Structures are given as C-alpha cells and as structure tokens.
Length: 260
Length: 327
Ligand SMILES: Cc1cc2nc3c(=O)[nH]c(=O)nc-3n(C[C@H](O)[C@H](O)[C@H](O)COP(=O)(O)OP(=O)(O)OC[C@H]3O[C@@H](n4cnc5c(N)ncnc54)[C@H](O)[C@@H]3O)c2cc1C
Ligand code: SF4
Ligand code: FES
Ligand code: FES
Image 1 (cartoon, chains in turn red, brown):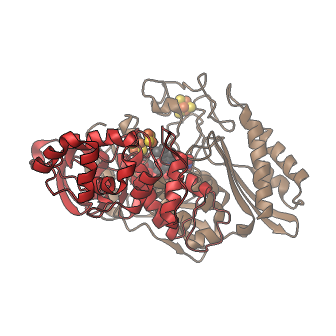
Image 2 (image 1 turned 45 degrees about the vertical axis):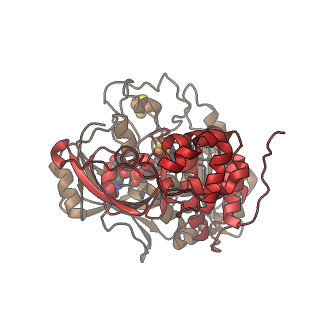
C-alpha cells in the first residue's frame, strides 16, 4: 500500500490526537500508512472509536492506493490471458493464468485484498462482490470470463470521504466481530437493497404470485436473503439491524451497550 | 486445478465446434458447479468453453407455454413475472436452492447438469463408480444419510441435488438440446435424468458435446394450487434431505390430476407416480393425502443411515399436499 498523503480532516486529526498521540506527527508529516490503520482497528474493537465516529468514518472511507503491478508478457505463463474489466472507478488490464478466479485476481494481481477467501468453494460468501449490479461469488468466477464487466468491491463503496450508508449502518450497529466476513456481508447487503427495490422474491415471500413491487424487508426476509453470507462470530442480530436501518433510513435502536 | 485453455464461444455453432475439437473440453455457464469440481480435481477439463456470450438467455411466451433460455440465470427465471404468476412452484423451487449470490450466477442449463453432492464423489481418494467407473461405491457401506431411498443400484446410491429440476419434473418440462450438426432434439423431463443402474457415471441422457438451448414449459392448470416444500438440516443454504413439488388440478374439491415430484430421494427427480395415480379423481381430503403418501413411500428401500427419510418423505408429501390445496 502506498502511503496516503492527502491531508487529514479536522475530525481525523482529533481522532489521532486523542487515540494515537505518539503517531500524530508522523501521520501529519509522512502520511497515513498501513500500520496506522492496523493500530486503529485494534482500538476500534476495544470500543474506543465510538466517541470519534465522524473522524473514524472519514478515515475508513479513504481510498486505499496500491503500487502498480508491473506488466507481464502474455507468454510469461501457460494459458496466459489478458483480461480487462472495470474495478470500482478504474479500468484494470491484467495478465492472468486462465485458472485464476476473480477473487485471486482481485487480491493477488490488483492488490484489492478487501474481498476475503473463506472457503474458496461457494459455501461462505466472504468473497462476495458486485458484478454488473448483481452480487456474485468471486471464488467461483473465472477472471477470464469477466472481460468488459464492471466489478464493485468493498473498496469501491465509499464516495470520497463518505462511507456508503450500509457501511455506516454496520459500524453503528457493530455488525461484525472479527470482521473477516464483513466485506462480503456489506457487498451482499448493498446488492440486496437493489433486489428489494426491484421487488425480487425470496423463499420466505408469502405469496410469490402477488407481485406488488418494492419489498420492505422483515427480519425473516433479511435472514433468508443474507443466508449466503456466513458469520463465524455470529454477529447476525447486529447485521440484521444494520440492514434494516440502511433500508428504512430510520434510526434503529442499537441492540448492544458498552460495559461500564 | 489442472491447466486448461480458455475460449469464449460467440454463438451456438462455435460452441459445438469447439467442444468437438477437444476430447476433454467442457462448457462453462455460471461456473458454480464445474469450477468447484475442478478445484477438487473431480472434473479435469483441458479446455473450457465459456457460454456466457451465447444469445440463449431469454425467457419468453410461446404458443404452448413458456421457453426458458439455457443461459438465463436462476434469479431472473424465478423472478420473471410470467413464472411467478403461472409457474409459482418453479419460482419457489429455485428460490429454495443455494444462496442469492449463487442463484445470480447459476444458469438454467447448468442447474440441470449439476452433479451429485455425494461426499465420496467429491473426495478423489475414495472409490466412486460415478467418478471412476469400476472403482466401487464408498457410500454403500459408508455414511449414506444423505443418499437415495428410491431407484438406487448396487453401483451407486447418490441423489441428484437440484431443487429447480424437481419443479420442472412436476411441470412436465422438455429440454431442448442442439447436436453438433446443428439439429435440435427435445427430451421429455422424465427421461432427461437417469437412474444409476450399471452406469452411474452417466447422470443424464445428454451425449457429450450436446448443448442445452432451452427448457420448454407447457401450460398448466395448477398455478393456484401448487407448492414446493424443502426439508434440510438448516433453514437456508443447504441441500434437501427431502423436498416435494406438488400441483393439483381441482374441480370443486375433487383432484382431477395431481403432479408430484420428490427431491433428495433418488438419482433423478422422483416422480411420485403411485401417489399421483391414487389421488386422481379423489376428494382432496387429509385422509386421502395420508393414503397417497403412504402408498408412495411403501416402495422405498432405505440404506443403513437414511431410514428416517421414509417418514420424512411421507410427512413432507402430506404437508406439500395441504399447502397446495390451500393455494
Ligand atoms: C454452496 C452451494 C450450495 C448450493 N445449494 C444448492 C441447493 O440448495 N439447491 C440446488 O438446486 N442447487 C444448489 N447449488 C448448486 C447450484 O444450483 C448449481 O451449481 C448451479 O445451478 C449450476 O449452474 P451453473 O450455470 O453455475 O453451471 P456450471 O457450473 O457452469 O456448469 C455445470 C455443468 O453444466 C454444463 N453446462 C452448463 N450449461 C450447459 C448447457 N447449456 N448445455 C450443456 N451443458 C451445460 C457444464 O459443462 C458443467 O458440466 C449449490 C451450489 C453451491 C456451490
Ligand atoms: S453413491 Fe455414487 S457418487 Fe457416491 S460414492 Fe457411491 S458411486 Fe460414487
Ligand atoms: S470464499 Fe467464496 S464463498 Fe467462501
Ligand atoms: S465478524 Fe467474524 S466471521 Fe463475521
């Protein structure tokens, strides 16, 4: 990851000043680096970030930049294929082994490690990304079949300094514990909003024949429609609350409290 | 995964041409089954032909019913207004399978062609007649809780895993396929998948290199009295232990015809012909539902670990009948 040299916002500066004062000067002089994020994530799980919600959200929304991957010649590997597709806001052209999944291509060739490899067999949803508007599993997608397609990963959901409403809702409702399933959960939930708006049915939809348009999602509907995303930490109640808040736009009571 | 050459077919004839050039070539649609099998070295194609660009993804009305393109996605099929209205049992069955992500990827043709989830079939260190003909069947005397209770042979006791296909069986669909010379043939759904007999390596009656182009659904008179019930180890995102697709053509309270198929019990969608014959022209009563279910399950032959599927099958049939009747 390249250091991100764009200046800190006042909220971000306050956050570092309060939580990581010894690093503040370093961040100000030489930019944000990966280990700063990591330390901050440690603090996040201790609950210390809550009083700095605004600064933390702006910080997490920063686009992460990666070093360019050098071009390789197509004959460099057996069955090499040049494939180009849109990832988040930019077009990527990469040489891949025909066997590479979209997940491995994103992680190993493009440097977007937000999408996670949980099972590599379609059984967990950790690798969920949005391709041409629909949520799919990148571990069961051959990158070679993605020519010309448009892919959105967790890294592409925020706009400038602003998190996607679904990301904000996950933060507010603590929709994660270890965070490993979270990029997949959030991409899945973002696409679910589109599906609900289009009036797509699910297995628990009461009357399939009745096609009344947009669907307001009940807890049961959310559980069924999100069943392709497994969370080992069992953060499900908070994930459901986050999705409900994101869909209704209404404030939903947090169902957790800090001790003390 | 072993190395393979990747090509994209622009049209049907190119796809058929490519597959006949290479002995170990395979089609790729959504990839949700074949990639999984390739990662496990269960499938080892040396040439992959991507069907993603073929113009076979439309769903349209025909004179006789509806035509589902082989490359149309499961999600799109389940949510198509005409399917939800006139074939709700198909919508329900598709939505009972896998997850939203997988249904967004899975194609109708690929769904029919998906292979068994028998865990010995997936484990290349185990004997399996389906994977390596003549090597034996590890499930026969192994863990066979998930396996068949109807129509199995001493060669293979696997079940066919698709939910969608169970509804297609009850709906009397036809599978349209294109051969290498471009001619088409139509296979009645009941003949599409086959019982294992002495050749469990064959799941269906498609010949190597044939391309499924569409699935044709005839009109039906039971849209308002149909159901799809699936019983599984968890509420969602799990394969069926037992499932039932049922549809009644009713006249008053009399069943004119019953259309019933079961999943999770055999090597192919199991058409419950005995129950169908019993219910024909009978009153739609609870007592008759019990008799029909009993009759169907009376010929079941359980293995060492799946005797429970007989009672489960019976109760699932009865429940499916009740839900279909209520509409
Ligand atoms: C974790 C998981 C859970 C699942 N749960 C369920 C479930 O509960 N119920 C259920 O029903 N299914 C379930 N599935 C299976 C899923 O529905 C199938 O994998 C999917 O339908 C296959 O479609 P595809 O387009 O991805 O096929 P692919 O993987 O692309 O292809 C499968 C096979 O079909 C062949 N093929 C594809 N298209 C054609 C064509 N037009 N003509 C000829 N041959 C063709 C391919 O060569 C390949 O051999 C699950 C899958 C996973 C990974
Ligand atoms: S049941 Fe069939 S698929 Fe399973 S091990 Fe036996 S032969 Fe193989
Ligand atoms: S990593 Fe793709 S579903 Fe688990
Ligand atoms: S937060 Fe740990 S797996 Fe979901």
